[in-house]
Length: 432
Image 1 (cartoon, one colour):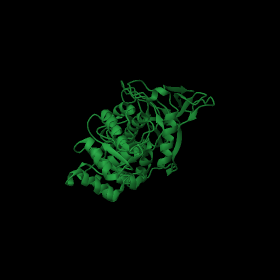
Image 2 (cartoon, rainbow, N blue to C red; image 1 turned 180 degrees about the vertical axis):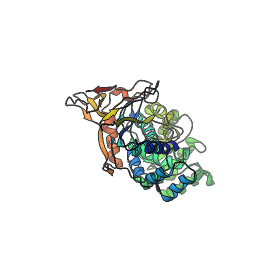
Image 3 (cartoon, rainbow, N blue to C red; image 1 turned 90 degrees about the vertical axis):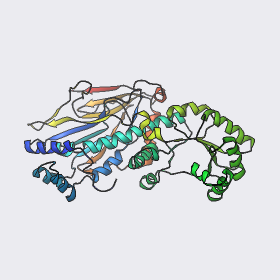
Image 4 (tube, helix red, strand yellow; image 1 turned 60 degrees about the vertical axis):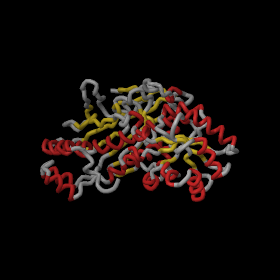
């Protein structure tokens, strides 16, 4: 994301600021929280992703002269509000879950402490980034969990918006995908990239064998040859003839992948290409990957299902005011009471209750103060921004390692793809 991010927001964020400035409430010390009331239907856990992208966007959340003039011309807000926006710089504190961490219903993924005006204006940018990236990471985690030790390749760029594709590749890498086809994700974030050829390359040449010969001559025998343009058995024979028994991999992109993988493995072995890997693609999701566990597949390429969250394109996170300063300067908790949309009042602190052998048992959330730690438990919240200055510096590989470690601490039922409740409960501790 480049340039100002200040207008990546909703109209009513600014009109709330205008009304609060006029009433005098804009400068009240306030606490906002990002959390999901529930996980997508049937999911056992969620994954936090997008935190660093949000902090990057926050650094660019400045209203330019051109943007201020645009707001003025369209009469979005009044002149006093425009003056305030022109000088906007976030000066508050943000804490939350580090990227890659597992989250559950009610988890305070992000806590923003600032004046009401400074905090409320960040609602849309925070939710748009966290909801998208966390949804992709949660889907990716289910896929890599189903794949086990077999690598997953992200290849969904052609199935979503061009910028969403970059963010999706980044989120997928955090959740365990090994590479992406998206070069922008490689350049911006250091996600490893990979790719060889599509059907168009084979169709360009007079014969399949000529296409394979050209690819091997250019990319070497360790390349991956796509063998299903015409006839798979013939494609496998042409692939081994072109690259020899040291051929790196073949890719199957159509048909019954379970049956096809077994047949291709048998054929490769018979041709002496016993170390040649088999890559499968073709509208895979976590369920298809789980089905393929018994097949001789070495790698999975996933596109559409990944970049659309595998049926859950948003993480369902909301951004709510949970406390504000009263006339005496004391923080008081506030909460919605709406049917099916109720929230819990008060500033939250989160901890994961662990068993003595290191298995997660509950998400424990303290209201107003940190929950009690029995000695085995793991605090979840870290400082992200302090007094307007970013302090969170984790790189992508750190987030990736965190996710692997956090997922490994969940009970075994977390990896089940069947519909069910969150794998651990959320418990609130009120010390008032």
